[in-house]
Image (cartoon, rainbow, N blue to C red; front, side):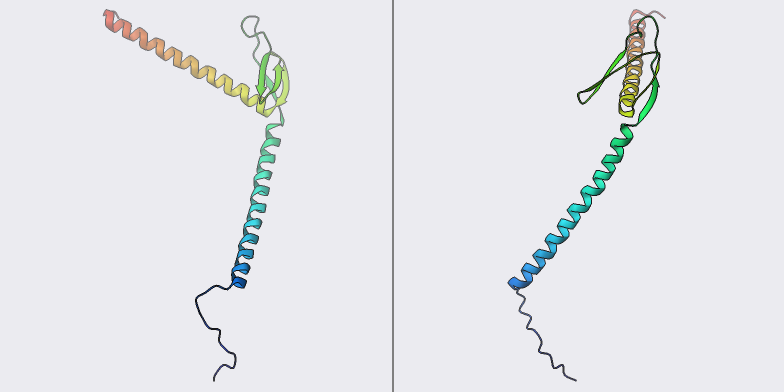
Length: 130
């Protein structure tokens, strides 16, 4: 049972036709991969941008002393002045900036209090008072 088809000789060399075919397949695969990735990324970015631009309600504390003036918030050159003591709707990203600012203020106050306590303790220890 001999095969009537002649067998190709395996010379171990890649012919120019095969090289061109492989290069075309690789380029097509890379192009397909590049086209797919940005689409998914763009969709995620768009969804996140839409979420950040949703309006949320905020109400800033107001008194007749230190917290009476409106609050200025700026994100990437876009500015907003938010009135205190009134419930307003603002984009979520501005509300997040206000929240982060508030949290940073609390962290700074806690740090300051801890350093004051350390100083007072060191002073008592050095002076020998209780």
